[in-house]
Image 1 (cartoon, one colour):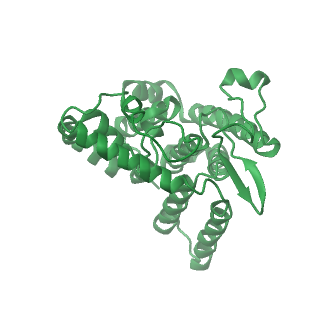
Image 2: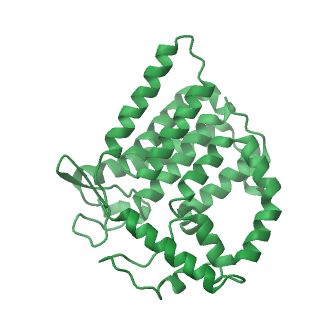
Length: 296
């Protein structure tokens, strides 16, 4: 919170937008090259965190459209889903922070960049969340005198999103996630009081065998289950109880950012386990709670 307050005091909204715009443009440029070439670029981009990837890399994430196979772009992230969640959160923060409206060119340029990154990630969870929350925002907040115009805008959003949702990705992803959830439930039953300890989930998860080939050991794709597995029912419940007031304030202040975290957090784990997403989440929540961010 202190970092968020300091950022808001020392930096003007324009500089925040410029910083996000530059970083977003960089990620979009790198991601498009990866998508087109079907492999990572490397070179100087290695020093920005790009991983060495190609379609033949074991466990790499792919997407197929009309029989054409693509490497789902990673940018400088460890997974396309992580990148999608990162820019989805930025999208709804920028969309709903009124003080950014003074710099409309920067604001809408950043919204466009974030939208493209979410879509080309082919992350179905992020794209569906993007579609649901944007539809909700347009219905409640867009002031159109022409109802046909509003319907046309929502319809266009649906069509564009469905194009990327139609891409075939891992056909076993649902079965894999169900397996991880079952393992997590078993871990909770095994350690209901104290949990396995923060950061120790993978150690316990490694004790379970998987029926899927090349399915590497990873956290359950559900933040509530992951959190309870590591902290236990009692400590996890107490943390939630003591945080209830903060959560309520968060919901009242910016429901869109809250729902972004909830919708993606129910089907993935990166908000707790991956550094880029965790730091962004903390900063965004700090910004929201340190100063009221009214939505349009």
